[in-house]
Length: 366
Image (cartoon, rainbow, N blue to C red):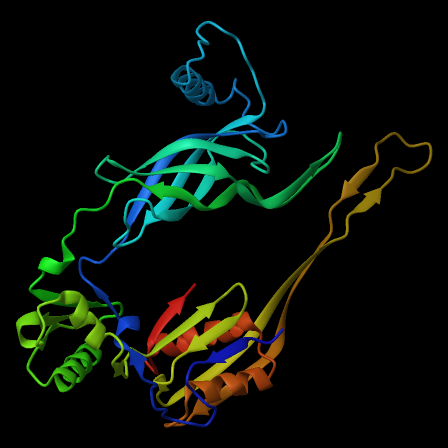
């Protein structure tokens, strides 16, 4: 199996390539404009006998008792062991500028020994943020992404039936206190900090607005002074600059996935002059035990005598080859593919080239 090579903005035999312009809104985040994670503990009902075993999950019985008592049902001292309920954790994300009444998606995951959440309904569950306050309430039918079938002696499961989603399953009840319109300056945080990209964003904004409104603070932040933009509205200022095109500059990087043999590289990856030699060793051990029996009419027992054969086989590999200056990494990968080098060997060769200091890029192994 040959390795899969994905070239990002790179054509074989091309040393350099021009970057494509990207909108500023796709490169930065506005400080203060962010979502908030929510979590809640609830109960899924209506399962077809695939819920929690209450003996193994006592917390399920506790929350079920609390819900029934809130509904006016007195279950104190009662013994009930239903198999159609399951305790779950409900998670979601409150987006920025979410208003009361908006609906958000939530994920429901079983925390007990329930076998499946298929066909279940989540009972009203409050969702809390990190400050402990309730910001949303979730309820609805769970859409699980798996299938389960079971018989007397066999069981088959496809996907994960113990987790599911509820699209628009939570309604926002509380808004995050953030007065965006009162800001006097904007801080644009780069998703991938880079001095060159930050300087280009500063230059593009200043050319658009005609004033020294933007100032690069560091590799990851560009400050925009609203007093110099001609408007006092932060929202209007963002509208004026977020669609401006910028050519981002990123570090050279090579990413390899050892499981699938995938190699991903950028256009700026360079390789210096280096010599490569690679070979394979195969260790083979064979067991061939022999049964030795005593002679006829002789006293004794049959004995199994172990016999082991061991050997080392050196398979032909890549001989000593020199990679000249100016050769791109894509050409090296293409040559290794042509020789039929396996993905594991190819990744080992790249690691060795990096260790030798000839691969001028960040090397990431997944």
